[in-house]
Length: 150
Image 1 (spheres, rainbow, N blue to C red):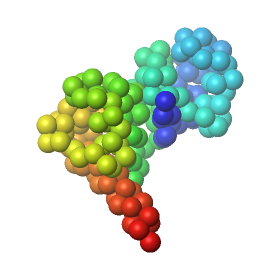
Image 2 (image 1 turned 90 degrees about the horizontal axis):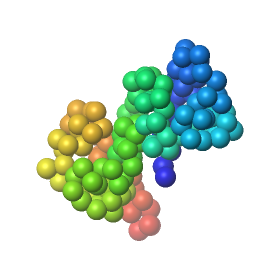
Image 3 (image 1 turned 120 degrees about the vertical axis):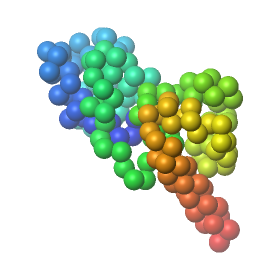
């Protein structure tokens, strides 16, 4: 399961401390070890999309409080994990296979017109930001293909 790439350790720590919680409290309510929470706090690890969603729910904070600002080179997987979703979750909402979502995130699948609106809503980004993420993925795929050809 993919970790949230732009998780903010400082934002996370502030969120649980503001609620009077300890690392042990967070570990218990989210279902991980205290050591795992410690790695999140130090930046040596980050929660999976599922655990991230649990943190947002348990800490009762907006997702943005637990995230670094969205970078210009954020790809589709970053948008998905920031939303606290797994590929399977997205596939279910689009009524497609998880492999379709995986291929889209790898740049080998194509963004279907009918997916733009639901993905923008799921990822809480405007369609233009979604298109930029698609361009990042497709550019990365193209660069890898070109490197293989040389």
